[in-house]
Length: 592
Image 1 (cartoon, rainbow, N blue to C red):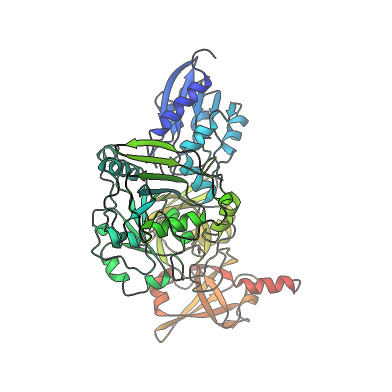
Image 2: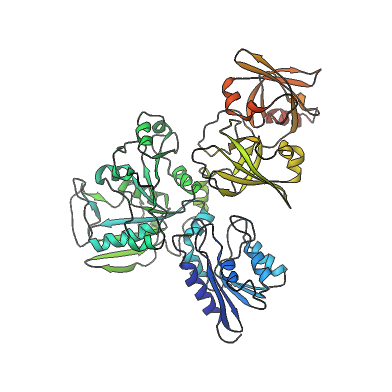
């Protein structure tokens, strides 16, 4: 090919991708250059999360007419449906004959499948050009995808002797206005600012970006996050200004149940329980942020928070603003407290500093040596495992937490696609998470505010009541348990054993005695005082009528009102999941 070289085409794709900085998260930044006969005929990039990806953005500018052209993209084209259609389909539709990709996408839904799909269609696909630059550009996305946690930037303002506050706790101002303005720009490019409660108590910060350039680009103030184990944040703190920016307070279970919780909620804070211990579980706090699709976190947390992150080995980027001052004093605050390292030879290695002069101050920027993914990947995966939602079989308890409404049903090649509106106050769905729909475990494939979508395969339609569900129907909803959640009912897997039906309903005081007919040989798993999940509701078996092939339960008023049972009557079908222990015992006894 004469004219534009492959390296020049990829460099331009990286430049275009960078224009989405701060706007695409949790998605990666992607740029695309379309070249034919050595000349660029179209360019595009992913402008913001929810909008077209880089490839369709470029191809749409030429009406998807790219016959014989080469596409340069800094990340493997996606091959799955999400908020937008697969990019591989757009490429194939355009007639392009060659694709040059900087790096493979580690997202499990892609991870080589996009490249394979293009090659299977006869396209020439080259991979690996300028990969180091592509990895650096999307380091936040890589940490989120590979390590399962947000990308963490640790910001420090310190004196020459490494002090971040004087002996009496004062820190305003260590650095100059020019350095502080630079820091505000860095804040504005992040999705969240994280501090500890001691910072709130000592400095009463606003934690706002206050950056006109960022606002002009469409960047809003980041979400404010406070680590506060005992809810010591004053309800009148400036960080709780009602300015439309969410404030998340990560606390403990005891803190959430304390009398301090109410005033903070009244002040507009969202409280998140992160463990039942005396201190916030950092793993659970980071996972809670990731669940809310906050993948880029700017930490200004104070010595205690900094020490915790350093001990965990999970700082991805360091921004150290150093002023030509000396505080001195053994009681002046250091950069970090915590355990630290004992052996200097085992201290984590960092890349050489990038030094920026900001008036009289200097900024030292660095990262873990060889990149943010270089430090103990396997160790981090193990450490984060207990904070992640189950990656294999999801777990439920049969405690319904929302009654949703089916808003749309569409026939798709995979079966049927349902859109459901839930009633959770803060739904914050995550694509890929598991939700039990009337007890049937389904995977979220798309989200839209209070609604989420899932697809049911023909097998699931055949074996559950989803086959008869339609517009306006109420369905019971339960989200899969995360580690640290309370067990309220019994162990439920979300795998339906059969579809039964309501035989009769009889009042019994304030309760209802509901009798259900069991399909096939399922009655053998029914034991008086045992457990059963009916449309995903954990209930206790009251009695078993072997001769009639039925069992009954007593439904208390709360369950009548707070689940979809309130709208059901005799003859209506219901999903049944029998207690797992009985099935294990049967298997161990050889099916007897």
